[in-house]
Image (tube, rainbow, N blue to C red; front, side, top):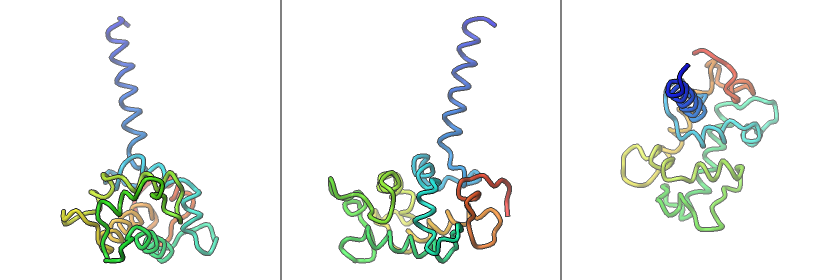
Length: 161
């Protein structure tokens, strides 16, 4: 193998590896957030935070309840929507108390806000926020049974519903 071809092959392999790592494992070719958001979301520590009854599964009700609380924490002025200033938070005060630090950091990016701002008004309403997370739940619930197992959470279950 000549030197130039070998370098191209190595570079192609590196690019493919990076692309694979950055894709959300739960999204089945649908981009639901950034790669960093997906990595943080799939951590078992996050699953434990959503699993209110400790049965090692997250039901749709637990998921919706958790994300309702996250929205309430983001909506600091309690007007039913989150603008950019609320979304990003203030320096030293941008961690969501009911989430991991890594998840808070990835959620509170402007890329994630833009992904959820479906009407493009530069605010995320409760309906937009919950709707985004309902799509996420549906993508993670590979069996379509209304609950996410630890294997589904970690993205280890393949195939559709």
